[in-house]
Length: 288
Image: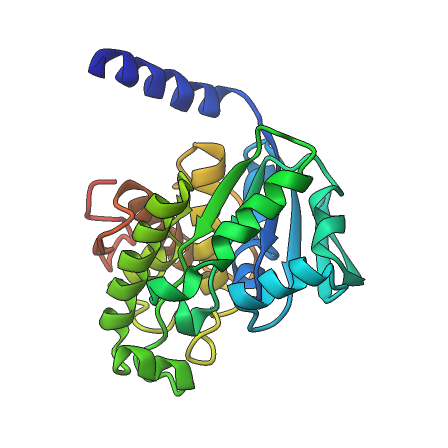
């Protein structure tokens, strides 16, 4: 059995490297999903010959409870951000029911609002309802669900929700990991995006605790790029290390740190892996 599993994984990873893929992703989120998927994910895919259609159902600071209420009431409460061919189109006053049938989505992701992301009890009954609601509407019956594992706040964050974690970054990080692992097990969601671990990995690098721009949202360049690298590697099954997509505003060293941080997070999603660089060469000294 183990040998069969190993052969399957080898085939899957090899196929991912050889053949371009096309993916349709819908995120039901907030500003954290905006940070993670709206800015650099398309470019990372295109650089490898892959294609992705991205839809983000956006409400700033939106909790699972609010998404639940919007679904129950079929409320036109969203800004629907859709990225096709690298171009973003924004449609206001959109409904979840409309977004779920707008494409034959391959993946649908959920996430909790950041201040409650490490509180297991706040996910229920909302995520269970939303998963069933999506299943009832989706055109693609083989679509898979994703749990977006978001990041802990900066150590000096003044966000009021930081008090839920004694204003300690590592306490928040470990709470998010624990809560999301349990949520995934309870709901049967098999795909997790360890963006929070990628950011925490990056914080061990020479960039330090600079991955947030305001204490909780991601820094606009390498911060967002790190999260997008994590999404890319999970969705497409290819290592992001060495990906040629390098936005002008990100230095080669920052890109390397971001790619390694993401790669290590995919490899060890529930543990922090240090990203140690040799200052003289800029090369990684930890084996990928």
